[in-house]
Length: 409
Ligand SMILES: Cc1ncc(COP(=O)(O)O)c(C=O)c1O
Image (cartoon, rainbow, N blue to C red; front, side):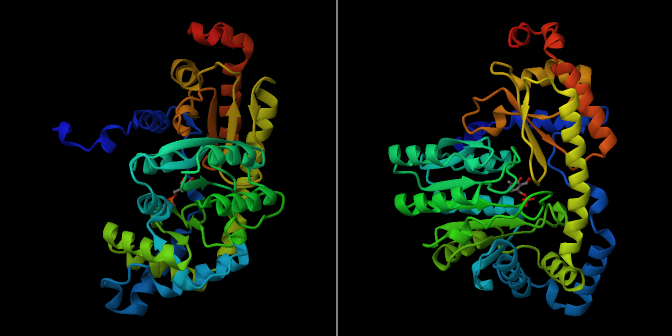
């Protein structure tokens, strides 16, 4: 019956991803693959109380259908937070509550992309965004990322050559998967280019509040002069992903269409959860909670960086993120990180990572991988990196069972 499925489904190959998560779910492996928060910091008792209070305070109404845009009081709190933390000044009418950042990405894709439409995307990028965009079958133009974020000169050349590009998707803060942050100069230049070439920017920023060193930079939306930046973020990484609650900030024309699309998609986000988050925020200082998890994640990041410095060979490059969840590793050109994972790393080192190919729209860059440092304790992080480092030693690789690997170093 699969012959009845739409092309967009048939063309959407997620086998790489399924394999990655199968490997990381094996309890015998140390998995750096998932992008999971540390569960010990989920504020279980506080959220439990917030759900109870929200239901008690609201009586029967909370169980009813409600507005698509979501609870006004929570939208107002987010608007206030946008002013304080992202230097973006909007009203609650410009905030839409979504089922995670993931739904927000899907809504933007639905808003803008017809089959074959052109978009610019960072290479590498967030796998879940690729899964969402792939469904709309865009033509991708991949822009490399360095320590200061998306390469704006390359973007300019691409926009010049392809003025049909409609959308630029970027993760400017503690990028998934590289961990790098876009400089403020580049943010401003990006908005200037979007104005010049009439493009919409999707600024996806779920890690923005999780900074462990250095200073915050204004959001891209802060530099927006023509209402062409859509900002999205989420409670997933700062409270709990199970809440499935994120938000989008957009100017009026775009917001109107996003609300219509969300209504067609799921009518509204679960009202009880939105009310519980609102009650949680009434009774707790979320910035104190964010400071607690940031301290813990800083220690984990430092443990991973020290282990990388100690156990990885010098011809392997890795990023040094100032926040977020991930470190990106670049192996010497020619090494296939996916083959290495399946042939050597999992069977011998019992470690899992996410190989690079499935994190590039082109699927062509094979010599990198993503490591997550938030989900495991420091001792396990150090042990896993030591085991992985032993596999990556040039001498060790020469004796690896695959010929392809042996010739690369
Ligand atoms: C860059 C980025 N955007 C969006 C999401 C989606 O998160 P959620 O739907 O849980 O808010 C993630 C999750 O890992 C992410 O890394």
